[in-house]
View 1 (cartoon, rainbow, N blue to C red):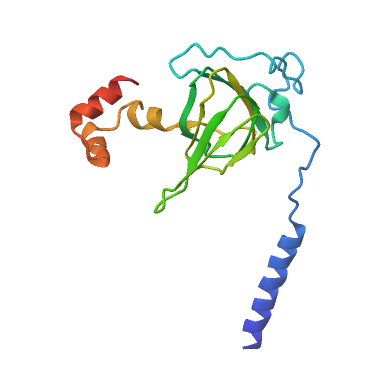
View 2 (tube, rainbow, N blue to C red):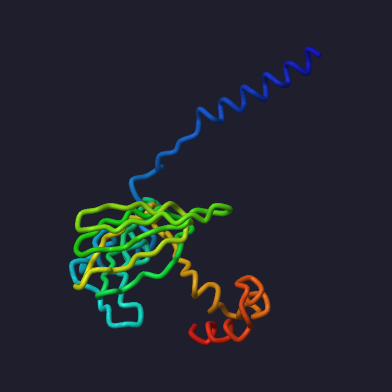
Length: 201
């Protein structure tokens, strides 16, 4: 019994030592992802330039992630400028690795996200210039310009590489495609409807 107690105390001592020794802060000031890249790894220029919204969605995202700004590597943050034509939309999508904070720079946006199962509750709001809205990590969300003119927003994300999964593309446009009988059953529609949707992607 004494040996058993000593073992438990030893295990606790090692565990507490490891917990106390944990260092959540970075071990260096920065770590540029590609030190051979030309230019300044800590500078991105051009975010003041509106994106071209002449596309079927009527929107354009200008990302500033570690891919565009190598100095973001290991810093756990990125951002994106989003431009919207009148009635332009950012379709339902998720960021698997980041929470997003959106600030409206100009215009009027209808935004929202859907909570996870079983509730699947839509939380939405109409935002004006200067309003801020949070999209929790991994939840499907969207934005739509509901004003008559152009709109713009700035999103900050809690990851250097947040990832984007556009719901419609992921469901109807993967390679190879998801079997139409699986999608027909999941959406409770005829296979011909699925075929028409898949043809769009």
